[in-house]
Image (cartoon, rainbow, N blue to C red; front, side, top):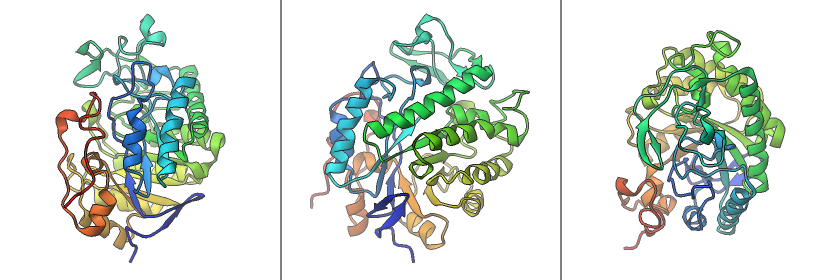
Amino acid sequence: MTDLFGEVKLGALTLPNRLVMAPLTRNRADRDGVPGELAATYYAQRASTGLIISEGTQPSAMAQGLPRTPGLHTEAQIDAWRAVTDAVHAAGGHVYCQLMHTGRVGHPDLVRHSSLRHGLLPMAPSAIPPLGMAKTYDGPKEFVPPRVMTRHDIEVTIADFADGARNAIRAGFDGVELHSASGVLPHQFLADGANQRTDEYGGSVTNRVRFAVELSEAMADAIGADRVGLRVSPGHRFMGLTESDVDDVYPELAHVVGKLGLVFLHVYETGNRPLTRVLRSRWPTAFIVNPHPDGGRASGTLADAKELLADGTADLVSFGRLFIANPDLLHRFQAGLPLTEPDPTTFYEGEHRGYVDYPAYAP
């Protein structure tokens, strides 16, 4: 039986266990997208897990869609992230950077140092705004219809992700994860409810997976496929995103991207375990599952992790919110210790409270 607490190879890395800290948006960078000093403490506290995947990090100013999310496109951002990766490595851990472009989930008033401040709208495959309200530094605002990405916009965005991957390696990350889940830009291209294009990036399944494939290829060319992973969330209805053909789109995506030799596929489940198993069968390298068996926000359990490993569905298992309040989650799982419940009111923004003040278990 595959042991959650045993070693596993991931590209050139040998991870001490198969537990992964999933990306968690915490909104604690400054307004220039520079991670704060507490970020190094936060990630180092959780370094006992086999692999940490950072919060979503924008490879360009245009990619930002939420307040106080970090970037990796300025020297100040790269320097700040280097302090984080140094702290994680000093604690014996491994850390990947998740690169994220929010696409239509943004607002012209949000980004300080980009053409958005001069009226340029957020970009998306089609001019379909998300549901809900945009989060800005001035409070919630109505989403605006995004501008339709031109071929030039697509090429520039792909180049931005390749540069972001290079910058991640410069900042000391062990690799990068392409965020193609939870309603962000690559997910918008995959979803027929958000993508109504009639060119080579819309319509058929082959066309709708093209953008994610080209992003993956560019990032692999930039830093090596064995340092690039891909995250997906089939059927995740984030801010009104809809997908009618997940059973066709995601096996095709796994098949095509799998040929590139990426180091892992990371699946955020939305209650469709049969599809997860199909993707496992299509994917040739490491397979990470973030279990959400009921399709809701609640994470799976240690029992779910053991089941996924035992039946071969997963090679590694990731958890998100459990890591917020349990920096020593690995130890608690190993020793059968009780878990601390996180406080949702401190998930986003703020400073140390709810961020670095959750203690390790003490009897």
